[in-house]
Image (cartoon, rainbow, N blue to C red; front, side, top):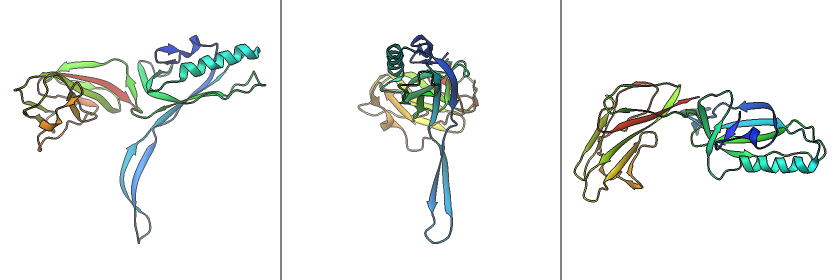
Length: 234
């Protein structure tokens, strides 16, 4: 079953899915052109976007009914923000993406089997676990997957508390300052942000601090609060 935003494609119209093509994540190389000598200097490799193409047929001879079904399919696929796409061959995983290509049907060939929906994953091109796991800070945990998991730390911030978190290699220290907000604090390790609601507390992030880098495998994050993570795969 193909599901987008929690609604299955098969419940919208009697589609016959011919193929689902999942592209690999694009690899974007950053290079610096040499002004005199041949070649270029390699700087770094970064992962880019990925696409999912769903090829299907809509075997309905009645042109008016078929057109209405195609409109419903387009309405199902359209979104103004990235949303979760679930595919039958990736159980318990979702891909956050947005529709970037709608079907282009033939008026004459009702039997055509090349109707296509294209989805593109921009912000998070990895297949992400639906289930979120959590442990208390100071407890060892194991993150499955072959890509960095989505990790955040949640705790309650008071006016006088100074917070320190460490994975044994990197240490983050958030000190106090006069107008620092209090309440439910969320530290996003992937985006390297720390905020109470929409109010950032990065002003208290000390100069010698280094953000903890999420990685698959065994990790122990010491500090105060709860660690939440969702596993990801290439």
